[in-house]
Structures are given as structure tokens and as C-alpha cells.
Image (cartoon, rainbow, N blue to C red; front, side, top):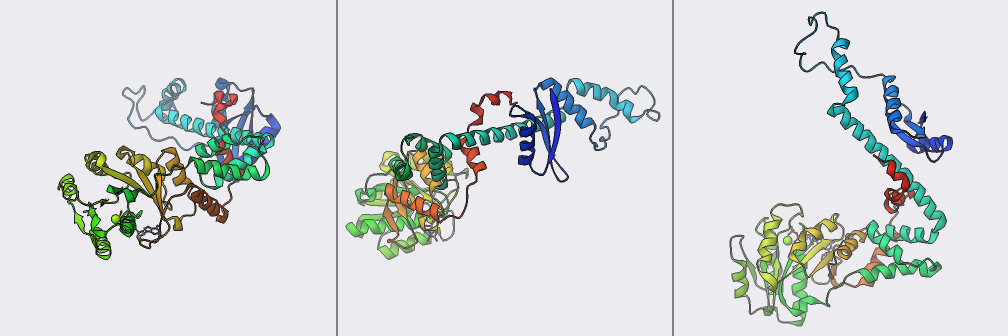
Length: 416
Ligand SMILES: Nc1nc2c(ncn2[C@@H]2O[C@H](COP(=O)(O)OP(=O)(O)OP(=O)(O)O)[C@@H](O)[C@H]2O)c(=O)[nH]1
Ligand SMILES: [Mg+2]
């Protein structure tokens, strides 16, 4: 086994040096920052035991920080403490460490192995990506375009798999978009018009109350205002109820406030003559521990209550939100704040991944004008337009990390 130390300005340069000098089978044994760049120790004809030994020798020649003072004095000093030298006291510990490393050393070794693993994975991902660029440039172009939409890597990969390699040119550019549109689950047309009890749930500030007002106004266009009732369960924030009451006044629709200890089922019973009851809930973060109580309360009403998750297109973590509200078995979702989004790939990936039907989209604050039925083609067009408007360039390293799979490579077997 040949071990050599390389110093370069950046990790990429160091790896290039290793590859040039030691060939593609070289193994990175360690890496660390040094003044002026990074140091990489690499080996050919890798032998794990020899490598560890060589690394220890290498480390022994490095300047070491002074050893920490001993925590407890030895129980039976061989000599008096006054005459004992520190090196002698440390000798048995060093012997022990050589055979069974203490936890701190083990943790350090694990960290180093972890960083070696990441480094190798990055290297392999880069190689795989370059190979893909050479052999399947069309697939790379499709992945690049889908990635720019902000879709999850899994979804982008699945769509790219559907594009036949024979498809080229304009068709290759348009096909992924239509394959994406085909995957977007769209709910039944304008479900609000069927009436029933509908609760809007979702994180704070995503537009639940505003959407309730928009939906009520939409329903009132085709029905009488007195066919509608609004219910608020939001007892958490000052002003939250007032917001719904003022919408109720504007629309001429009664608003009922139901406290946490009140029987929601009984209130809904009293409102059974209303064709549409819209229930506004308190916004809760998907990580709020009281969210479970809110979900249980709504679930206890059974199938007569239909929940819709409200997702803000400009917010992060939509996938987690959709998962968190899944126990409610939502009938659909409303995607708001499209007017403020810079990308809608993440919410589209979330609804596709969880098969959550999209029912409405909201493009602004105006009640009721800014609420529309969801259309898959229009959503894809919106995603494409947003991607075109972005100045962010996705570099090859990020694409390689997302779309290569180094763990499937035979070289991965040498990983710790
Ligand atoms: N730009 C934009 N703003 C919106 C949209 N929908 C709602 N808003 C605004 O977002 C803010 C929050 O809306 P709310 O309806 O109060 O949101 P909420 O989910 O009820 O909030 P909490 O009850 O506090 O959880 C308000 O200023 C709304 O006017 C939209 O589609 N686009
Ligand atoms: Mg609200």
C-alpha cells in the first residue's frame, strides 16, 4: 500500500491531484484544513489495518495540543506523586488506548470515517453524473429542467424515467411538463358547491381565514347567504375571531364561536339546516404538540366533516405539513399565496407524493376574486414561469449529489 499526503487550495484540487497521481482506485484516508488549503492523505492498494497504522504515525508527527491534566489520581502510585513524571503516568493509558480506544477517540474516528465517506460519495456522485452527461445527455437535460422547477429529486427522477430516450428536441422539452401535469392530483370540480361541513386546517398564517371568506363568498354567488354558517374554533389568538366576524358581517353570514371545551358536534347539529358550514381552525405549526388534539377533535366528528389542508406556496416544509395532517384524511387542499411564491415545485411534490387532491388556488388577498379552481396545466405553467424568472443557477455538484446514487456503486463497499 502506498500512502501519500497532498496539499491543495481546495478539496476539489486535492482530489484532482490524488486522481492524477494515484489513479481512480485511490482511497482517501483523511482530510483536514491546513493553513492555505486542505490536506488529503490518500492510498493506493488500500489495506485498512495498514492505513490505520500509517495514519497514527502521520498524526504522531503533527504538533499535538498538550494533554489534559489527569481527572483522578492513580489509586496506587508506583512511586510517590512528587517523583512521578507525567509520561510515566500516561504510559498504561496509552497502551490501553492502542488496544481499546476510549470513547472520545472512537467518536473522533467515527467523525473522520463519516467525513471520508461523504467525500467519497461526493467523488463517486461526480463521476457518475459526468458519465450520465456523456452517455445520456437528454436525460440530464430533463433532470436539469425538472430540478429547476424545485421538484423533489424522487419526483424529478420518476418523471425522467418516463421520458423515452428516443424523444428529442422540442418534444423532449415539453414532455416532462405534461408528465408532471398528469401526476398532479386534482379534486372534484368546485367541491364547495356541494355544501356540507368543511374545515380548513393548516399552519399559522397560510390564509385559512381569508380562504374561508373567499369560499363563503363563492358559495353565496350561487346560493343564498342564509344557507351558509361560519364556525371558528380559533380561541388562541387575540383578533383571530374578530377577523372572521368582520368577514361574516361583510357577507351577511352568521359566525359561531366554539370554545375548546364546547361540544362541536352539538353546534354543528344546530346548524344542520345550513347547506354549507365552514369551520375555521387555529393555525398550528406541524410541530406543535397540541396539533394532535385539534386533529382528534375534528376526527371525532366522523365522515360528516371534510377537511381541507391550506398550504402556502411561499412557505417551506409543505411535505411535512401534508404528512402531519394526513390522519385527518383530508378531502383536498388549497394552495395559497401563489402570487408570493418564487417556486411551487415543493408543494406540487408534496401533494403528488401524498396523493392529496388540489381543489383551489389563491393568488392574492382579495376576497373573493383571488380564489380559483386548481388546474394541473396552469399549475405546471406557473411552475415553469417561476423557474424561468429565477436567476439561481443549479451547479453540477448539487445535481450530482441529488441525482447520482453512489451507494449503488461497487466502490461503495469500502465505505465505513
Ligand atoms: N399574497 C397573498 N396573501 C394572502 C393570500 N391568502 C391570504 N393572504 C394573507 O395572508 C395573511 C394571513 O391570512 P389569514 O387568512 O389570517 O391566515 P390564517 O391561516 O387564518 O392565519 P392564522 O389564523 O393566524 O393561522 C393575511 O394578511 C391575508 O390577507 C394569498 O393568496 N396571497
Ligand atoms: Mg385564521
